[in-house]
Length: 322
Figure (cartoon, rainbow, N blue to C red):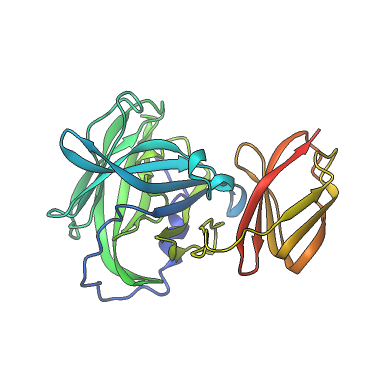
């Protein structure tokens, strides 16, 4: 059998290696049931050189009763829509069995060919335990069962204190021709440090790529950030202050050179995304209210921008190149 070693999941494991606590957190932290948001990012990985980041946002909001059981609704969307719930589409349903400390995901019938409760996390696992996990196969139409083994248990620091981390070695069939050995960490009350719905990472879809959790928040409070990835979290004060006013001229424009941006609140950073969700331009600014963009981008199409403001959160919008 051919063994394929990917960088997938490597950095999230090393991320906390230098600061991990030898003692496990003693208080169990349940999985969130509402008002949680994850930002997950995929990079092209060319011998350790990361490029072309594409981010996805997952949100938990509201619940549904299915066969008499309460599930939390999970939604999925793009980073430039992260403050607009109407732009997110229903993606599935989560539930936690508090007695066994297991978390499950359920999809609508025919979404991925499986509407059963699929195990995502087992926070009661012990070192040496073998856990069967359903993961998306290379056709991306159904799930297959794979085995993982718990190799260690420790704790990691978050902005809300230490959380228990279960680290697993994950053996997957690679397009049914060989295996790849991956490593992942499950963190109590957070999920996987690569993606909250990690079992969607099909066996060949992410070959040569790096997948990581960029940040995680609950109720607007940021618990985890990853220095390797962009983070999109709504400010805690959102809805309590007036949004900054933005003027962009010209718009539409022939190219993203010499575009003037004027803001009523100081600008800290600007990010531009194409309609595939790919980051095509980002630049920090020293608290300026008026700037001129020089991006060199000339490809026609619609681009989404996210502007970070000092102490005023974010504004989003679109720029059209014609």
